[in-house]
Length: 269
Ligand SMILES: C[S@@+](CC[C@H](N)C(=O)[O-])C[C@H]1O[C@@H](n2cnc3c(N)ncnc32)[C@H](O)[C@@H]1O
Image (cartoon, rainbow, N blue to C red; front, side, top):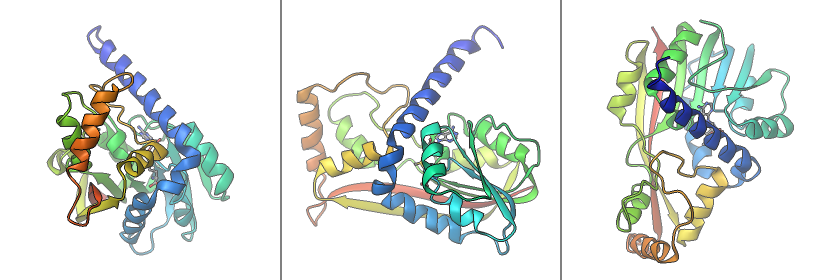
């Protein structure tokens, strides 16, 4: 390590702690507000290859909702891995299964042996990683040649309305950055080929803006990127944000929140 690298690493460690803390605190509320996450995860499960089995990894397993159907596949064991210990504790308590092992670890630094996995499932987690290149290098290392990886993640149009409303108020980064399809694909191109790709635009509709902001809080999906504003937003700024978002009500009079979802079924080369 050179001296120049250490501030970057320190910032990353701090950001990961924030992500882990935020999701751990949200463990008990997450399931009650995770409608979109259920829909995406179910669609991703439908992309499972015929006869999928063996040692599977549920990466960013959260409350373990999808670890369970994976563990119920014949002749399968699952590692449910998450950065947030609070999520794993909740999953172990509420969805126990003898063929699931829980592991608190970082997707970008997996404590797993080379080629030890027969498959990977990861729904709406990898967008929290710092470097797609480092993530996919790790996934290529731990998956055996020929193994399949099912991955759902978010594209840059996600929460565009939220970004647009804050942009009318200030220049801080209030909404997480999501990687482009091109950046994601170039990060995995050395280790994986694409078997299936789908893109869906899902627009949630809310009666009131507070329902959206409460949902994001309940999911633990706060903005934790560098560039966010630290501290409370001033009353005037929040008011300006609200009126900018209210102006975006759709033709049914609802508050829209767009999610751009990418679904991949990849094969390890
Ligand atoms: C939106 S939740 C999705 C949970 C679950 N897959 C689902 O679909 O319900 C994202 C999860 O990814 C986890 N996560 C975020 N960054 C991670 C990382 N670097 N390594 C492992 N897990 C991570 C979070 O702690 C959180 O539980």
